Length: 290
Ligand code: SF4
Ligand code: SF4
Ligand code: SF4
Image (cartoon, rainbow, N blue to C red):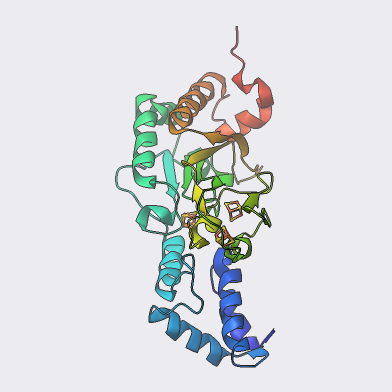
């Protein structure tokens, strides 16, 4: 299927993580009319159907145009939660806190809990005492929370980050081999056996897309768990955050956070960013000094 220039330009403006799905829906819409080129007019017609709540293709996982617009807006604006940020501690919380339908976790209470812990551990006072003069961007400790592995709040460049995840599992419900879950999975992590879906958990990102698309409840999400990352930053010497744990429960996330603040306070050189402490000490970060 070809796309004319204007239609392709409009497709580019769809958020990257649902672009593939939208593209497919529109191509099916055009193919059903016996044509092979998608025009801007087709995109408009498809949008009208979606905006009217009529999915181009049935299935629980299809997002309506209204939802797509809402997600785009949330991602662009970001979410501000009252009372989280201080002068030196800045939270980036993804649109899941304001209704993005893809979120796997309740972001607001978890963000508030981390802010409380930071207060208890006196992180703000430590940061304030670690440099003189005005607070610049690189003096701030960044905390990111992402409701799903689409990672719109950029956890990879935060000092401490948490990503919500849910492992898909097969149920006893009969699988109808409709392949909707396979089409939904961007990681090619599912294949259909005679008894239903089988998952390659080495490829799976625990994003919940397959569960959302299965209309037969043959897949469910296991309880949410959290990926924890530390030590990401931009600036003069950028580093991507490293994964500390791929499957933590919330109480373990809190323990990690307290430990991170403790080692930062104990081991940072004057004015050193936490990400630089992580780079400098590597695995020795966690070893208590005698
Ligand atoms: S990270 Fe996931 S839940 Fe959060 S805004 Fe992006 S798509 Fe939505
Ligand atoms: S949860 Fe795993 S198997 Fe399901 S769609 Fe996401 S990556 Fe694929
Ligand atoms: S698990 Fe669900 S979505 Fe996947 S093939 Fe079976 S019925 Fe269809």
